Length: 332
Ligand code: TRP
Image (cartoon, rainbow, N blue to C red; front, side, top):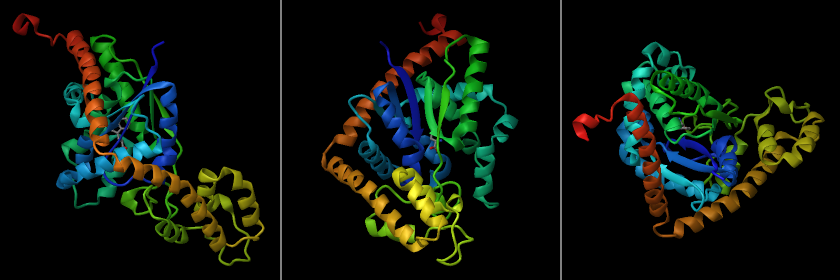
């Protein structure tokens, strides 16, 4: 039986962190047994924020493939490739650009927020405002039924569904409409709702034990618990959110001790640092093993790139066919 298809991607803009793990890596690699998976490293999309640092991407990409492997990516079952290895993605982006209006792009709440975070000195580029169009091409080119992604990607998924439906309506049914599967969000060490490298509130998957201890030590707890003797409210504490995500079996005991002021925040944090390091240690060991294998990353990407290109070309030919862009009388 043909396996259903799963597609997702990440920008290679820095180290992967616990937020990536909880929000997406964990689920997506578990799904490899049921789906034919395409994992894309979005190097062109990374240029929308890193065009002045393009030569950093090579190193980030290598780190990302190693993180994938250590988190459970199975190169025997699944495909991992770079966006730039599949020119059909750029071609489909060129076509989709005409099916989306500028006002529609400017209404995207994730884009709005990202523009706000740029500050007043930076103006959004054409590539930046349009990256959801390119992402719509990423999402549909491989004709997946399932696209696991972070909650912040929901507006991009909705755009992809709209564009695919519009394309199908105008030219003919080429694209199945994919469904987003949204992962939970991990709070940052500063208590902000989202962990992100650019906020400086992330614990990386490659952080050493002492770094984890220091970051956890600086985490924000219930602001109302001003003294050790004051009962805490776990629901307002970011340390508790991490227990929930990484040590569900301790969740009830930790919450009870906090509410009863039986354990102080310092001890509670020390316990969490232990939990996280126990989680990260085997991850980092696996990663170190993969890192030692010469040519591993290169082989994965070369093989993945050619598989993705073949699949991409198949869809693109159908796209051109239904649009009347095969030009057989001119080229055939
Ligand atoms: N925008 C995603 C991120 O910032 C990366 C991405 C690019 C993606 N293309 C995609 C995610 C397609 C899912 C599907 O992490």
